[in-house]
Length: 163
Image: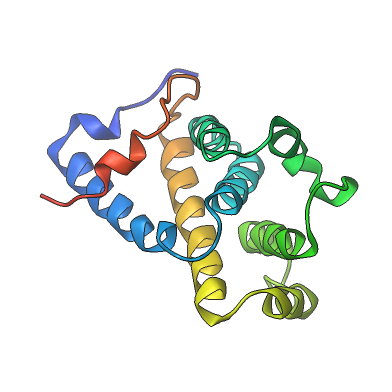
């Protein structure tokens, strides 16, 4: 499949992308570690099949200091020993919040309780917002068939200003 369109090739696409990045900046400035933010985004992107976002978040995770082992194992986090209980709660939220159509209740009470036992109110808001934002970004990328492979770490941060 060829890329259908470059969203950044239109004035509206550029303006939208800058505002989208600015909204994400609030999450980036939270107390959730950058590496966990990237792993959450990577896991949702894997589920949604967004090659461009997988490219972004593997590279940004590595640039933030995440290990190759943890980046590679995030797809099988339940079957690995390298994630803390707090990280597992965030990844469970990510999966359940991404697979809304697969469960009548969305995020389970068990997952929510685990999340609340590890994170304060602002951190929970940041994680919920992160899951919502990455799912929106994945949909943009998948709809236009945006390809992965060319992303350079730091490019998204440069969009975080609005003109």
